[in-house]
Image (cartoon, rainbow, N blue to C red; front, side):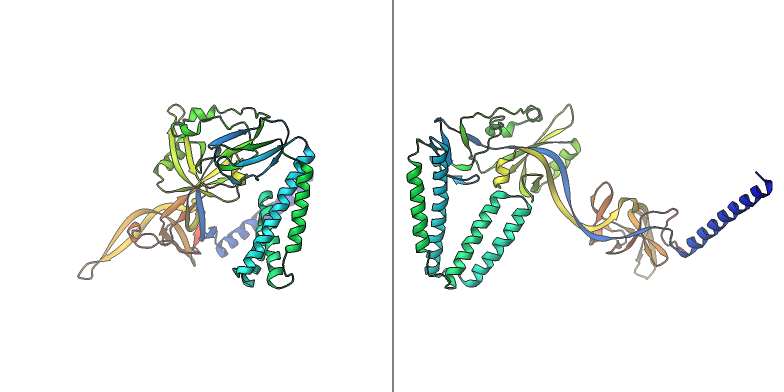
Length: 427
């Protein structure tokens, strides 16, 4: 390469580097080189994640007679002891006709109830219109949740409210003609279906479901208070017999067993309030629960946690094991990055009776806040800490603050920077 050309390239490169350095110096003098973030109000839930196993008082209902079942109750319905669960028919057509007759008779009862309420004057147009609106909202909500059973209920409620409005506004005088038609149709279906060859009943009262998963007898419900972590780890799914009609969950209380770390067990041990539990697939909202049992495994340090619940719906009734979130409480405060938290001195000034000022310093935990071009160190009171951020109390007890000052909403908190100290002025 020509020496002159090489010198020109070298001079040009050095000139560019010099310009870049000068630009950096200019930018440094004009702009703050300490990145900040606003302290914003946030609510978080202290959560423990695990895999939950549901234990219920489940009673399998045998099906001793060969044939096709026509269920007398839907999944999630409550049934009484010795109550009818299903009828058994010799063929599928007869069972379907009987099921259709049950559905039609349900519609008849709904229309008769509407007419009865209109006579007693128990409803007003405002109430009816509000019922229609709520039914539509609930239907859309349950559709988004893919809750098919609730969608059917919402649809029935909507139809009932619309029929009420027709009767109340005089669009129809009564539903007698429709009721008689439906009764005749149901009777015809019953006749064509013929007599059932058997009736299946339940010995115990509770929530009914057709769904069985093979875990019904994996652990005795009455022994939950004695359960250990080794028991949970040994649970194995059994086969589901073909000759069963479903099951009834008898006890209003049921339990969620899960494995947690030793640190998580310690947090739960000192927690003296109720918790919440969210099932990843069975529910879309957290349900209340109580800490029933914590059993530590001496070898691994892991622990068994058993939560006690009494809320029931179709999703929970058919759930067994899935990821869960245990909520220990909500915390509302100012969200600050953990990188912004430092230890530094704050000063408290007190005055004696003669007016003489007395200053005292103490090292506390806090953050550096940018006010204009000046850095100020503010003490914080942490309510909750995560891996990346902390939640600071907006109005902590005065006894917790050395000089009575803490961060405020929308303060510009410095999250990164060197040589920070209280009173520093940034050019």
